[in-house]
Length: 156
Image 1 (tube, one colour):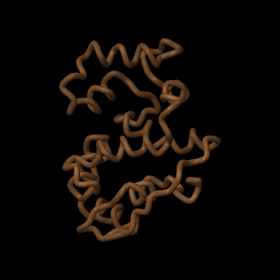
Image 2 (cartoon, helix red, strand yellow):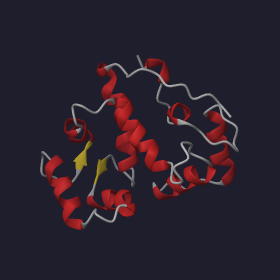
Image 3 (cartoon, rainbow, N blue to C red):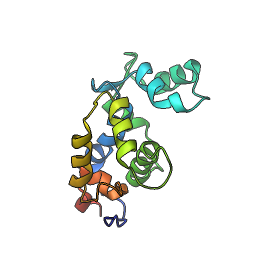
């Protein structure tokens, strides 16, 4: 098992860089904007997320009325009270399908498939190892940040 020590909140000046992984989690088709289809895929596990709710979410965030939420709009709608850690922890929680506090092989493989980035078994195992973890233990929150190339040293 690898260490996954908690760090204090990040510097707000680095917010754009640090929230990118949260945006990317929602941008399932990786086109640089969040569509209704992206949100439907994301919220498919939440029965209360009807098409009306999803349309309202897009409408509330879509400042330029393009029908999509681009990154700058996403950045503006994040609750001021939500810290960068809270945003990333929510993304982590959604990846941790079995709720055990670790993103294991099955969790990561399912997320990659859902996000339209299917990976072979060896690729998923290599990602877990790149987080500094034993492949059988999965990865904790900070380990996942390393995998996603979010520099946890900047978390001050």
